Length: 237
Image (cartoon, rainbow, N blue to C red; front, side, top):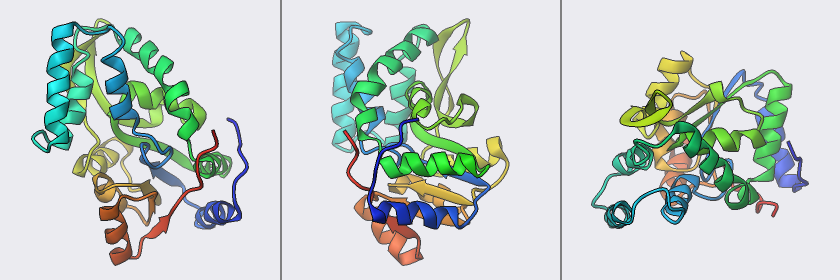
């Protein structure tokens, strides 16, 4: 893990979390551990890589436009960004995610969030990544945080004989985040970190909730509920 320099404000934030001595911490990823939207980015990047036929690309592009116009729900779009890979080899999609992540997302990692995760590991905290982005991308990104694959809860499809199917097995978005944390990890977080309203259910079940780089709606809610609000330093390029 590369450790970057960061501000006094960032150091104070990291120390404030460590003083709580959490034994289990749950982190959203897009917008929380890094600035970029890896789920949306990977989807748009894939459409240019020749993985899908021209007709499928046209259909997916139209579907995404409907999502941006509010005609497709967040959960539906997140799920379809996974199941669009139906028929492809699981290993092929994982290789694509690895090719995508480092040049496109890694430069937007918030350095103090990387440092926080590192220090939590050192203190024996159980750290999990919980994201509605597809698990191929999140699993690859976790190499920058030393979070193992078995501590990733991300959007996933059933794999049969090494190939992706069109059946979702989990979608950690909104209420799905808290539900999957409780069903997979079997306990509530001591600390949880998120940036959007899709993280509210996860933040609600945490002993200590942190709104990191929050969208306006989460910022307002965090202030109402006295959750800690933190604005990260600019990512180290």
